[in-house]
Image 1: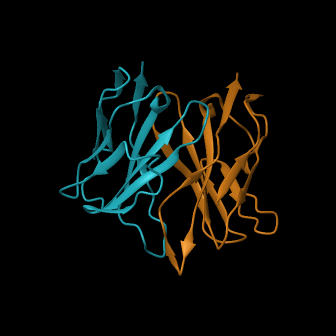
Image 2: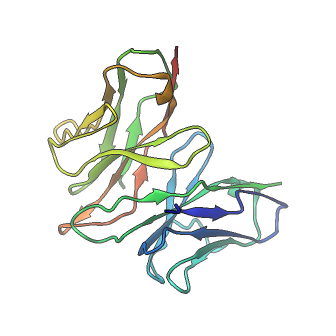
Length: 117
Length: 116
């Protein structure tokens, strides 16, 4: 079946512009995560959803970053007034469910490479 | 807060050599531990996991043992192949009250290059 997809794969924008990054999780997956990965580093948690509810947004670096998942499927991560320090790979992952005794594997998408000039 | 530390890289080996990539963690409670792999041009994939102390995760010839006394989860493979060339990430997630909270905390990654 189809895996997690993200679009666009590459985004180049000018400082001060808003960008919207899209994630389409595996069909039926309840949980959806956003991570940010700087070059040469591991992914860092940003936020996650169960269905349409945002359960934890503690990793969002500031109020320019927001995420939504209005129908419990596709999610959008929005960065307003982009800055050069926002340049990174943004990764999305989904899993069947979170909050149960057994860890449910997170399946990662290919990522969106954001470059802010 | 929770953290994961991986050995400094990159690691370069000849085919059929023995591989060890060190990983240590700092976390309260009882984390579950993972190794993820990223092949060139692809997304992150789960390689193996261990959910409690002394568990051994294994997959594709790779192994790692959850050592609570040393807070370690070192990745090993007895004989690497060129196709194992990738970036390897150690990660943890917290268990709280018997349930698993899915937020992953990653190490910085180790680049492995295997030459024929």
